[in-house]
Amino acid sequence: KVTFQAEITRHLQEVETQGEELPSDQCVKPWSNHEIRSFLQEWELLEDEELKKNYHIASRIIARHLNQRGINKSRRKCLQMLINMQDLYWTIHEANQRPRSEPLPCPYGEALHRILEHRGENKDFS
Image 1 (spheres, rainbow, N blue to C red):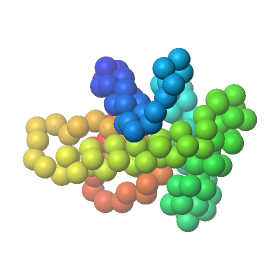
Image 2: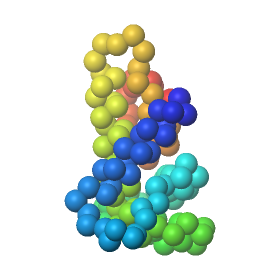
Image 3: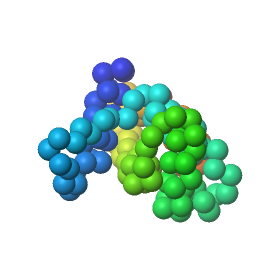
């Protein structure tokens, strides 16, 4: 499971940097597990449901709160993480709708489930 989460985190980083031109001397630091969990906590703490849905505003607020925690992530990085996490959640959700012997686990699935308020019988996120 840890390997699967590391693989998902690496994939999220690859998606995040696609299409960006980075100077060769600039190092892209992947999000740590602690940073991702902090990010999800801040996303979940957004009180207004409309605000949770407006990713541009939400990413600005989350970036500010993460910076207050000592986690330096830009609004753009937070926006990309919002999009990546939503894509991850729904991709795994759709895959688990197909018949399979065991459901695919979703890293950070419980937090994403609460944030995205997916209601229904789908309880197979771990």
